[in-house]
Length: 112
Length: 114
Image 1 (cartoon, rainbow over the protein chains, first blue to last red):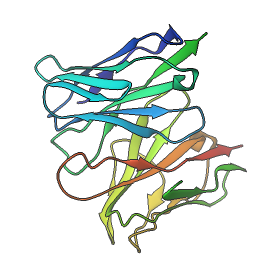
Image 2 (tube, chains in turn green, yellow; image 1 turned 180 degrees about the vertical axis):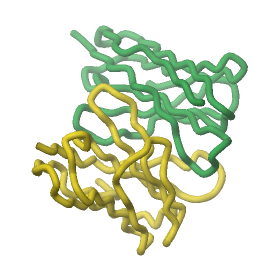
Image 3 (spheres, rainbow over the protein chains, first blue to last red; image 1 turned 45 degrees about the horizontal axis):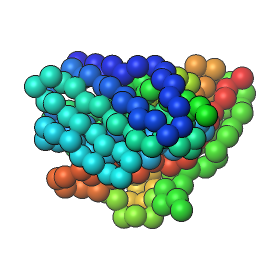
């Protein structure tokens, strides 16, 4: 079966750094994705990790440890517009194709 | 700029009505998907397609049906809507092949069945 865990809510201050964790237990692994979803809008792609290590993309970085079933999304220099839900998703090897299993998302609130 | 379009964005209907949620993409993607998302909950895959005339059921059982007659079009139909079908329905597409194959999502169709 598939199981993805991430915190339900987080609050951080504008200009600060926040780390959103995700742990997963899936039947096979072929990549981990992070998506951002603003209220009432479509999820948009942020990052992709398939090998261990850190992927950096501007203010956003994502880390993966396959042996620990663990990933985090790091957001630096937080801005008010970063207030959104952050979805962790895993692509299992079994089942094939590009089907993703999503976590429930972490609702991030950025305050002044 | 949206490359994947869903209509209607919002729909309120009565029990027993037949509805079709439309999804079209202009990116030439072979793979298309329907996800269902309740407020505060994870996205659940209900249908997917790897190309024309290919449709499969997803991980979450759904009473809806889909068709893929054209590459760009992947409509979802509920023959007889019930209040339990109230949810947000998100359409997505991606390329074939290896690599990231990022999903591009539509803006969603929020369905309320009274």
